Image (cartoon, rainbow, N blue to C red; front, side, top):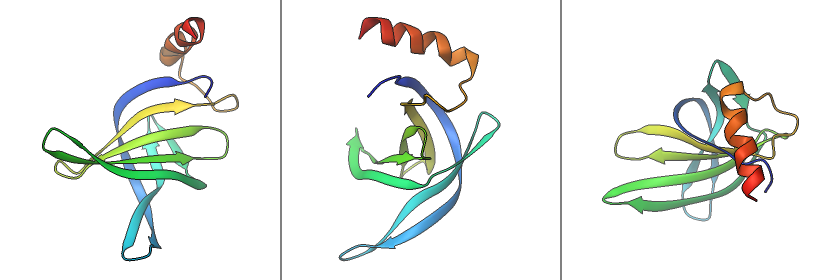
Length: 108
């Protein structure tokens, strides 16, 4: 992946959709509010549960068609975290994250 920008900030997921798996109904984020912007996800990538200490964390890789997003849902605290944005050649970027983007590209 190119242009990975670490965010690690809490976000609001304001819409969900459900998909019937082989055994259960699974929930996926559909729309996110972050930094005054609305992001509507068009496709899902991987979804997997993991643990951080005693907490169950659900990791989602999503895309809006122009950028890829990694989200984490903390099942105990019921909070969503935007971990990073990647491959956002056509997505607007807040200037505060542009410097970290340039330094990450320089080390690659």
